[in-house]
Amino acid sequence: MTKRTRLFLLVAAGILVVGLGTGLLASYMGVQNFALFGSDGPPELAYVAPDARIVGFANVREIMDSELRQKLMELQPGSSDGADHLQEQTGIDIRRDVDSVVAVIAGGDDDARPLLLARGVFDTARIEALIVGHGGAVEEYQGQRLIVHEGNALAVGFLESGLAAVGTPVAIRRAIDTKVAGNDVRDNAEVMRLVQNIDNGNAWLVARFDAITGGPQLPEELAKQLPPITWFSASGSVNGGVRGVLHAEARDETAANDLRDVIRGFVALARMQTGQRAELADLMNSLELGGQGNTVSLGFSVPPELIDALGALHGRQFPGAPEPEAGL
Image 1 (cartoon, rainbow, N blue to C red):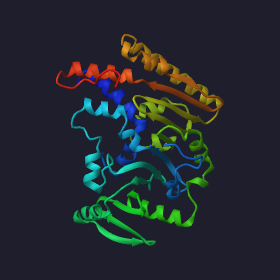
Image 2 (image 1 turned 30 degrees about the vertical axis):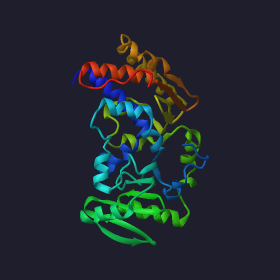
Image 3 (image 1 turned 60 degrees about the vertical axis):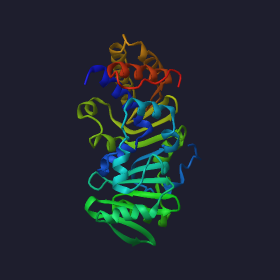
Image 4 (image 1 turned 120 degrees about the vertical axis):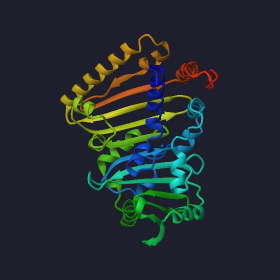
């Protein structure tokens, strides 16, 4: 793989991190493959336990129908965003069946409970038959019908009309218990304070920072260089391009100042490395470092023109690949 190809794939992956963050949940589950609402977040939070460590939302329909995704799919013919594997495992086609998703990881390091709550239109009989045909079994829990495959530590439940839950059997049972008890993540003031600050765009993510650094998501070398961070959040709007902002809450003001220095260093290095690439100038110039007290923010914008330019680079690298038309 050439440097140009790696650069394109890295930028494309970075664009999709905010918009298709459900991959984080999928990696915990072994399944390879976020619309505006009130300040209390989406109604699916009624099923999310108070000890949630990671909560994300995506308006899947807007993202799947966006110009950006269409361009990326044209550049990688045959790619399915991992959706084919999810469909094979659960019978749910995230590209067609799902309108929105809430992705959650709750519990501690030793008993992390990944859960995906998908709102959409589902062929429940077909999904049940698929899982049972692969060794699953149907069970009743708190009046809810679950299809459980203990061997794959995977279960699917239809908690309401048009609301499917996918996750470990323990996670889905606890989601049902949470809704029945009426004590959910909306009673967690720390999480909801962050949710209320970023409930815009069509994708967002709130995470305790140790939940990110404690797994395989962040390289150990990078994690060691970062000052103490308690919470991380991100919000984005995916359309022809991407606009977004990343937030971090440090342990104290000194740690926040140290984090700003680290980010300035990374930005300066990135600008040096991309200084000869005019197609990346708009992205680098869009980076805006902010925040006050113990908070740090970094805004960014990836315009449609940059996507077109990266697509053209990819097309020249792979002459048989289609090049997106400028201005699409």
